Image 1 (spheres, rainbow, N blue to C red):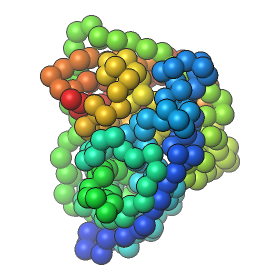
Image 2 (image 1 turned 45 degrees about the horizontal axis):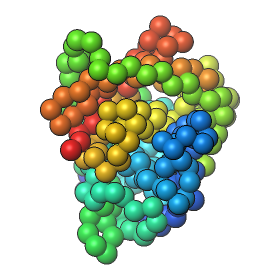
Image 3 (image 1 turned 90 degrees about the vertical axis):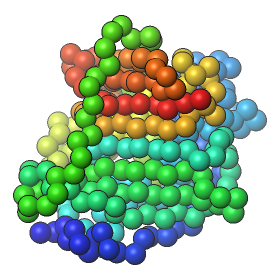
Image 4 (image 1 turned 180 degrees about the horizontal axis):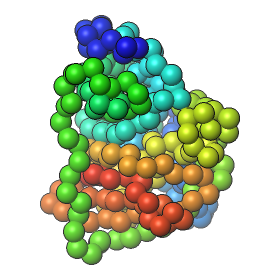
Length: 286
């Protein structure tokens, strides 16, 4: 089996030193669709360095190093075909608010679980970031590797929850630009699935798909802008399950329900009959 669970789980953590500047934050914000309309004050806080507020999901690309999916594939005990890999879920806990627009940090990444889902293996990779003043964030990526299950290992916990009920408090539609994946990948995710038609076909898709983490960022921005008064410092945590793909050019329908200290969110692709895109999604907030 190309995944050696014991080796992956006992390998020493990968420690990386990263840095970022306002230019990196601005590029990330543009990659998730900020800046429309260009002169709106609510957008300038994402696109103008003199007013810059860092959306917490920037943590998933800070430093420009390999993000969760491709980063996990370079760890000991894992040797799989990238075309059979899908990003299954993502969670983020913010330890310092606001995140700095410029900084240096040390990240510590390790595989914390390997689950056997019969038809796939699921890797859980946790990354912790800290600077000289202490912890900054912790993120966790769930990575599905198709065709690598069935060895009799632990199935792991279910990550699925009961969907929200009742009328959403807010519903928004956001159109993904045709070039959005090409811009987003400049923040460090070079997986050819998001740009190369031949690679996308080999992975079983009709054309390149949008990065799941791009949809993740777009959705958090929608929640912050509408239900959190545009205040990025109110976000404590953010978790989702990637339930389906998004193709550049499609429109996303983002439905939001207020709760006690949390917003629950469901995202679907309007162009494909509201096909599920993000599920089991919660933004914890003050």
